[in-house]
Length: 434
Image (cartoon, rainbow, N blue to C red; front, side, top):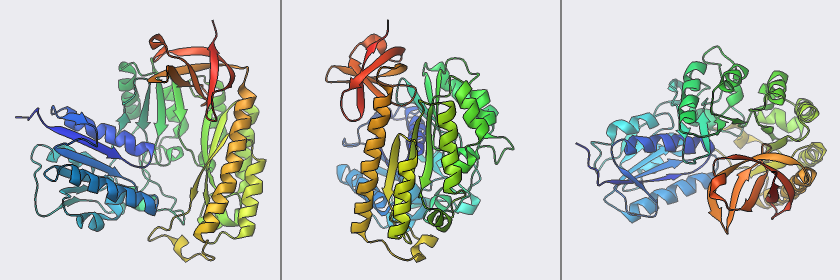
């Protein structure tokens, strides 16, 4: 017999994949009549989905756990995610935590909901990364207009600075048939855009004998889903066939996110990345030759152990040469059990900050120039439900944020607009094209 008076609160850190997985876990509670409330409210359950990409992410995860315990010391505290996978003993030492589920054990949360109770000893459910072979399907349906669809998990690359293979295991996915059925369930809810998500989505099909391109070709056949955004794809896995398919298929939006991490070949080799700058440059050139208005974002890590001033200078010159729209950059954070710990020289925190500032300035210029190049052009915008200062917001096909005067009839509608100028650094204003 379910207790329909109970409440649950969620807190999610990290990547879009985590948010999709939290959304899926939340439906376990909803199915039992348990009400979802804000994380700052007093709940019977708190679920903290953690991240461990940096030491700061670990700290934020611990802070969130402490907040939940302070809000209600009698609540059931459930901790999951990458930090829970990599550092379960650290979390176990936090008095008040009842359950710890590793990154690949989130499905098991469902089976303890009905019997969960406060105990003196923390219950730990984790799997060794070598044994992570099951795939946990997940969809985030929190927004009426867009959904994040998890199509792949894990990574086989073992980059020198990264713990993802230890936190999420090896690359794996469900079949195209199963993935398409999930996408159809999204379409039935009237959602018009899907963001294709995963740890390394270009690796899709490795565990099922299929390919990411095969998946895209099947997804675009689904009635009701009008737009697909492709998440981050490693440059060596972003094949010409994928780019060419995106160029001719209107449902695949002209928006690419490609991890670079360094613009110096010597550093890329040290990082154990599977490409060089020449290959990366060729991918950007290919995209822009076929889709001139495409938005291209890249990832960059500054201050990795071993990155000399000369190596960073090469990165600066390389990213300046790229026809890109945005740089998502990180300051390197040392991670246990990674080879980068042994690289020399060690980059001082002040140097990391200085390098990050330089990359931020380059990114700002690139982004502003990209938006300027789009002013005066017509685009289709999918407007979302958020209302702020009398405005409604949405994104163009090529990921430009648009604001116009609020009109509830535009929510979840794809509307043609003409961009007329900047509203602020990140947003443009536009007129509806009649």
